[in-house]
Image (cartoon, rainbow, N blue to C red; front, side, top):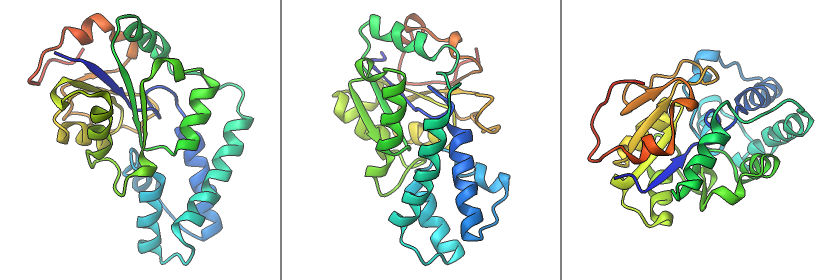
Length: 227
């Protein structure tokens, strides 16, 4: 039986990916890095730290990782603060509130920085609904490593087999399954055609989900038909 739900943030609760992408590519231009859209898509679900660690090694960047991250986050922060039309994704607030009313503990496990998570949670008043928040910046490896999800389960006091993860990236689904958790893949139009076929279930709209449906899922996990 599912006892807690772990949400990813970017691409599941809110679409900040265009702002992240713009910030990264502005910074790449400054650094003289050429990165294709296809190559960039392989990093979705990874933390900013892990991305810059790889870029530093691959492109021979001389600045330290902290400096590189700080510059990118300045680009992102300005874009986020200037944006006026950003909303939670359709069905996200309704699902969060439905699960909360049903007494299901909610956790966040996002590769985003604590600063970015705070910006989103403050703007959309999400703090009251979530018991714990786990940021990828606290881990040496991000998704597809399962550490974020396992830590979220530990904070929730639940074994992995009683946890359900909602993810929109291939790296995130891989991490959830490696953690031994049930995973619903959200085929979001904002997530760059990610391969979610290894999720237990895939939905194309968060409004296909409800507390009743999620609590009715049983473990151990098995493949089910897509909604």
